Every structure is written in structure tokens, then in C-alpha cells.
Figure 1 (cartoon, rainbow, N blue to C red):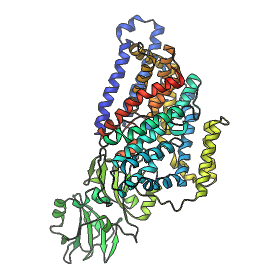
Figure 2 (cartoon, helix red, strand yellow):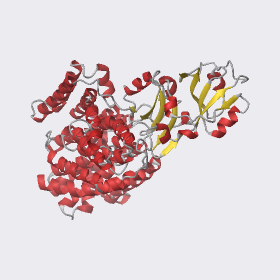
Figure 3 (tube, one colour):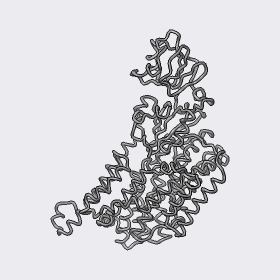
Figure 4 (cartoon, helix red, strand yellow):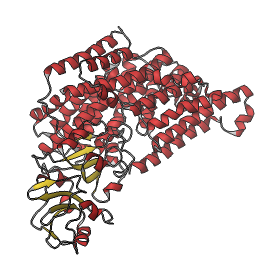
Length: 640
């Protein structure tokens, strides 16, 4: 479903952009014959950069390669075409040393320090005490806490830390997680608009604003608008949004396997004395078996065994838990001397073993995980982590068969049977989000105070302009490592390298858009349609266009593409360019109408069991509401 929507949206988006360019007549033969050679060369620069923008949009939407890799190709192309793009090698590589890139990289590590301190988990554990089983209270408290925390640290790690807490809270209080997870994602976006450090979008927009109009953002420069946006969004989520969000997943019991309907696919069997399988290993029996059938667990004389099972030799009286549909199972056991145990229903309690640390868990695939776009077999996941895969949920759809050939996507949820050692390994790996409640007893108040002190010092130094924000955040990273609150290895793991490469590649493209006159040209075309409208309406159109763009490509990409255009438009109509920069910045953090426009939406897509249209139904009204409110308050606070 998501892939189909991506293709349809890309076609519509690309068509609209091409129509804007065609409307100018630059690429028509009639006009090319009329312009002078100087004008022709200028137009060729615009045409080439515009074509690069369109190709970039297509690749970002379709993702034939990871977005970070696509972004890395942009500096190479810019230099290869420097006759028209006017980008030198040094300018093409400037994104790697840019203050915004460095700051965003450091912010991921600061966010890791906050996570390690345990403060987020401790706050999360108190939610149930405050809200009980009241669903609307849970929405309000979770949204308020998420937005507040996301205002001072990067919002993506906040959601990563809160998803397991929210799903476990939903299970314990018998509330649908679908009701809670969209508010969690939306609140993180809304909270990210309160301060400069809330999201990488703000930091990048600040750098662009400083370069284009010599007005970088202060730490709390737009906080008053951010608070208004956050409060409006919060009120929407606990009123209109509450009724629009569907209950896709219902927890009638705490048993995870009931929610995945595993009772139809798990069967316990016994090996008979006359079975021809005796003396053979499980791996030998199932190696060449052309059936979708897996052995999840073996029980022998009361002792349970799970992966790796391939080396286990089959003996009389062994009990095997087999995952297969009934027809496949009956076909397999027909001549194998295997007896189905009819009175035993395989439950989560039966599979789990507290002594050996066996546990059934859910694992979410985040959008920057190395396993996205690959199958379980491709990455040798089950053997690498000694895990048994029971089911996979993608949105509202749950798959039980042919799982090893299932292509994993961001937002997928894997139901796994793992050992305690495997759970620890997965939990420490930033490629996965484990839906498992975190213990708070090991966290020390001293560590929390030191971590909060370091982050507070970073904010203070940067907000008072004592040192630059890039140096302040880097200093915070050094302090966290020096105090052992973040281990050196965790520094590299905490950084979202896809975002890093995305910024490094897009920043020089933003320069080319400005220097070649492409931004001014696109602004002229847009103003030819909207120029007669009131300024506040034009500001609202820029907000809405950027928001729509953000819903199909990344927030950072939309900022890089739209801020130069917005500044060009403001200059042409004599408006306040800073007001237009703010409108674009706020719009880039409002990807409410699609699960593909923002990382946090993808994080909750699978755990909430959502359909694509759920985001459109819940997010579109909020998007339209903010496209009215934000321009009005920008006009009131800063003037247009």
C-alpha cells in the first residue's frame, strides 16, 4: 500500500513541478528562439538545477537506494556539472563541515545520554499512575510529556524510547495502542518546533537562514509560536483527533500471541517410538523440506530448548512446537511417526521459560536499520541472533507464512521468541526498537542530574551566544563520554548516519539553487499565480506547499528546497523574508498526513497496526488547521 501511494504521489508531485516550469516558457522552443544568448545560458543553469531537483525528488520518493546514499551523489553531480551549477569541489563538500551537520550529529549523542540516564523511562513509568486506564488521559499525558521532552532533545530518539513504554502501557490497561501511538508521533513533531534543538530541521533551517538573510535562529527565538502550535495540536489530539483515530489493535489479554492469532499456526507434537526421524538432527530433517514449516521449540524431559535447534538429535518422546498452517503440518507428519497433542494449546506462557530466560517479544524495524529492504534470510537474522520468528506485522496486515523471504520495511514489527542474551543484544542495537518495558531500578539519580546538567549547560552556552551551538553540542558529547554516561562505542551507534549524509549532500544543493537563480525563478512562477493575494495568504500557501512536500520526502530535504524559494519570493514582493523562513521551517515539522514523511510516523506505523489512510484522516485536518494558525501568528509576532 505504501509503495503504491509513493508512486502515485510522486507522479502527481513531479507533474505539478514540471507544469510550473513549463508555464514560464523557459523550456519551450518558441521562447528559446526569442531570448538572447546570455539569457539562454542563464536559463540553462536554471533548467539543469531544476532537473536535478526533480530527479532528487523522484529518487527520494521511490528509494531505489537508501536516501543517504542518494544524497551523497548530489555533490558529485554538482561538481561534474559545475559549468552550470557554479559549485566548486570545496563548496560541494561544505555540507560535511557545516555547523548544522555537526550540531545534528552531536544532538543524536546528547539524546543517547538522556536515554542512558533513565529519565525518560522513569517519567514513562509514572504515566500509568497518573492516568490509570483512562484512554483520553493517556493521550493527553503522553502527548504533553513527549512534546516537552522533544523540545530540548532530538524528537526521533524520544519516540524510540517511548514506543515500548506506550505499547506496554496499552497492553496492561487494555487500551488500543493505535489510540496512543499517532498522538505520540505527532506530539514529538509539535514539540520539536518549540526550541532550536527540537529537531534537525530547525538546525538546518537556522543555517540556511543565516546564510541567505543573515538571521540564524536563536535558541528560543520562535518558542512563543512553538508553544502555541503545540497547545493547538495537543487540544486537537484530545478532542477531534481522539475520535478520528481508529482502534486497529485490541488487547483483550496480555498474551502477545493472542494478538497475532498464533493459535492457528503453532502446534505441539510428540515423536513416537517408531518414528523414522529418530537419530536424525532437526537441521537434517528440515534442510531440504519444501514446506513452510519451522520448529520453534523442543522440550525433552521437562527441559526446553530453542534456537539453535538444527544440531539437536531427535529422540523418542521429544515434544516439538511447530509453526505451520494446519494443512502443511498434516501433510508433513502423515508418515513421520509424529503425533499431534490435541489437548495442548501452545501459549506464550508455555513458550517462555523464566529459568532459561526465554521470552516472546515484539521488535520494531526503524527506518535507518540495516535490515530495511532485505529479507530475514539475506541478513541471516535468525542464526545471528539465535531467535525464532513467529510473525511479522506491517501496518494492519499480519503475516505468518514464508517469513524468511519477507522483505522488511521501516515500521515492521517482528514477533520473536528469544533468550535473555539475545534480548540484551537486540536492545543494545540501534538498528532495532524492542517493545519491552525498561527497568528503572538500576538508574542512579546522580547520573540523571549530571546528564541533565550537561544538556542544560549546552543549551545555556548556545542560547547566550557564549560559544556557537556546534561547539557547545560537541562539548556536551565530550562531557558525556568523559563522565562515562555515554560509552565511546555508543557515540558512533547513536548517530543517525542517514540523516548526516542527507544533510551533507543537500546543503550544497541548496547553495546551487540560490546561486544559479533557480530559487528566484521558482519564486517568480509561484508569485505569478499567488501575487494578487494578501501576504498572509501567500505565507499560508508556502506553509501548505512545504507541508505537502514534507509528507512525501524528508523534512530536511523540503527545508533545503523551499527556504531559498521562500526567501526569493519574500524579496520580490517586499515582504519580511524571516517570516517566510519560519513558515517553511514549521511546515517541515508537520508531516501529519502520511506515514512516510517523517521518521517518527514510520516508528509507530507497525506497532499501531495502522493503515495508510489513518494518517490522512487524522493528520490532514490538523495540517489545514496549522496552515491557518501559523501564518496568522507569524504575522502577529514578526510582521510580514
